[in-house]
Length: 129
Ligand SMILES: Cc1cc2nc3c(=O)[nH]c(=O)nc-3n(C[C@H](O)[C@H](O)[C@H](O)COP(=O)(O)O)c2cc1C
Image (tube, rainbow, N blue to C red; front, side, top):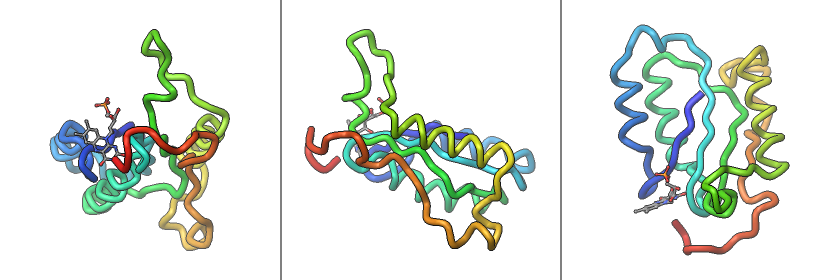
């Protein structure tokens, strides 16, 4: 599972470097993403990473945690405080990673991607980042 921010509609360099550093080790591994950012919640970073991980032979699962406006969930002590929806989607992601069917399974294809985007978090903030 990767936890990734989004910058300028893309993924961060450290995540790409980690993926590039290993090759065979990634192959056939299920992979899930927790993304965060501004209003976009890091979803575009994840879409870009899916191209990379599938090239490496990894198998993305269908569940995801996408956290919009991350700063609103960080308290004065810099501790992340997830809302209920984020926690629910994290449980769903971990369940799928630990034994559920990967997205490549045709039986999973009909299922919509689920995420925490824009649920329980007021929209607004710094504009369309
Ligand atoms: C220059 C800049 C560009 C950003 N671009 C995006 C973006 O394209 N999509 C998004 O969802 N958030 C974007 N953000 C918000 C960041 O994802 C957010 O600040 C996040 O906390 C950054 O992660 P980090 O604090 O772990 O580095 C941007 C922030 C900055 C400063």
